[in-house]
Amino acid sequence: MRRDLISKSSPEDSTYGQWILLGTGLAGIVAGVSVAIFADKGNHPWWLLARCSMGFLVAVVWIMAIADEVVSILRVSKAECQHQVETDPSRPLA
Image 1 (tube, rainbow, N blue to C red):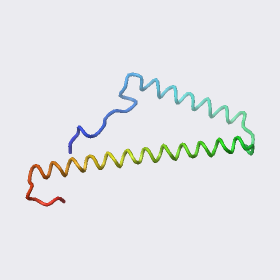
Image 2: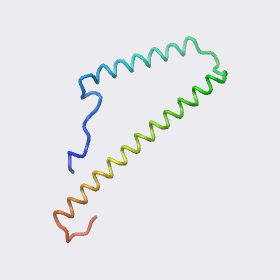
Image 3: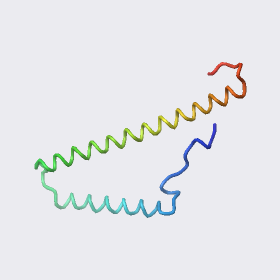
Image 4: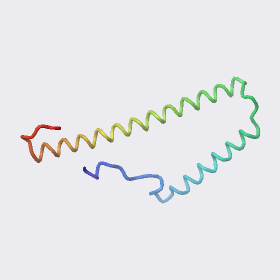
């Protein structure tokens, strides 16, 4: 398998990756505690709209992540097929 097609970058690899993870973690904890302290039943239309919008954004992020993974798999399989054709053109692709 060609390793140059597989991205090895992650937030932990960058110089500021740990600070980004720490900041987002702290922001999430502060937001969670704030909601736990100040939230009521959440029946107000504004809160309903906020929850629906958050659900939509989470769905979009999941779809983007899945699409990125599918594209990565297709790129690797294409590279493997091209490598197989270059090494032995008479052999059928499997």
